[in-house]
View 1 (tube, rainbow, N blue to C red):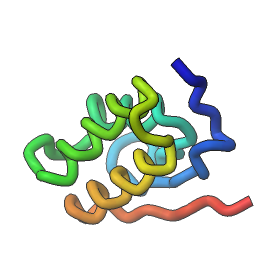
View 2 (cartoon, rainbow, N blue to C red; view 1 turned 45 degrees about the vertical axis):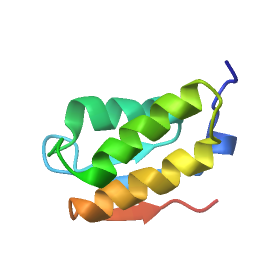
View 3 (cartoon, rainbow, N blue to C red; view 1 turned 60 degrees about the vertical axis):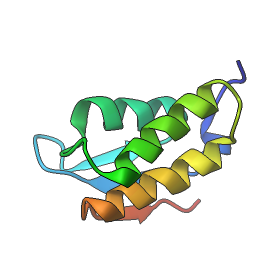
Length: 87
């Protein structure tokens, strides 16, 4: 399995409720963890597509940037504000 580093996944900051107001997602693993443990709803079409994208990326079926795009669509679906972190 290919390592999914932050160079392959431009950072994305999600505005979430809870102790941490912001959650920075830098890797496919970060995205998967966020979706599986901290996502507010688990029944949206884009949410399911984002989870599937994480699994596909773990098996090198799709590139990490496709996971990032899927995560943004899922965030839009659940009205989670997001900020792209640009270096």
